[in-house]
Image 1: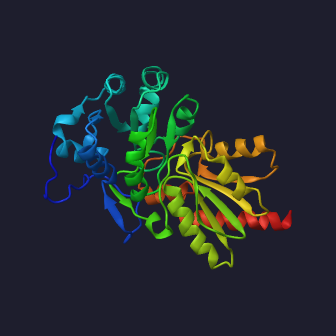
Image 2 (image 1 turned 45 degrees about the vertical axis):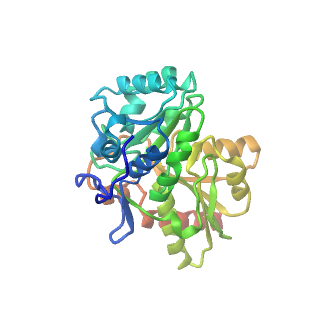
Length: 336
């Protein structure tokens, strides 16, 4: 087992674009550092990657624990088949690639080799939703929709570096497979200002509000908090509920916040088909609440390539777009 060194903290790849706002506090490669730290105390932890360790921050783990890192090449089916075999022997593998490759190329291997026997394999997917400008080949806008129907699979969509750092040991301790929508590179640090701790399977009310409730996951929780601050200038009191675990879903917490006269809005870095919005909407219908829920998310379309700020503006994920949508929906309710 390798020992902890005092060398400078290993950084993320300079080629990775960050969705952080200018001047925002960030943490470099939080997943890689959290996994390396966990492996210091848990000898079962191993890391694998499909030729993308540097671009999923797995290179931090590989440098700290080279004897427990396995580079599988550009072969995602082999990656997850191997991870399944390791889990069968009692190891706890974290296997990273891009989300599109895990969801689209390796689905059957993940389903039958990992999920059906309920093995402790942690699927780490980089570039979830609109976190890259590379276009449809790399933008995993439908990964949650693909994976939600897989039995036994837990799905986590973290907001920031704190979420990731606290999620990693809980994913390792969880019985059964997990899918982490990885935020890589220089990841914003947001939730430490809200007395927040990550709990697998739990949603958290980050701030209360009497007029509007925003239910969000992933990086959209950061945007929801920013929108809540901006909407205060319009004399609106906005609540934000962060739902980092998409499956299993914390219906009790979320529905308690929705079952009020407030405007309810979901925000997700994912197509509005099959993700957080439909998870919330189905829970509302099954509970018989009769409540309208407004979705903010990506369209059911293949998205453009380009710079992230431009794309977030174009597809409605920017803070200003959220503010405009909330104000528009409130005006609609006033005239209804």
